Image (cartoon, rainbow, N blue to C red; front, side):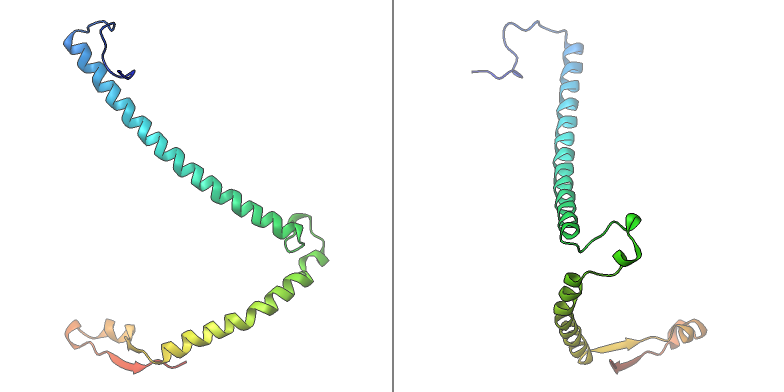
Length: 135
């Protein structure tokens, strides 16, 4: 069984220069088709991401956590009680993670470079200081 792209007996025979041009055009069109399919896939993935983000924003809006600032009155600019509660719940965890990073950083050594001194001294006499990180 032959595919539609295969040459079969009922096709007219083309002169060699024209056949080469047709073959070249077919290859070019297949390449362009492949590129367009890849671009389409990429655009569909981007569209899916944007749809999810829009749904998240709509959900926040519907729960009263997000307001249309153009149409907002001054009292709408204050965070809702639910948003304040959410922030209050998340802040201790965020601070704990910051403390972990600071504690880990305290154990590391850093090279301190005085940029003003580097510009004043020749490259061969640059001095670098190594010290424990101070928080």
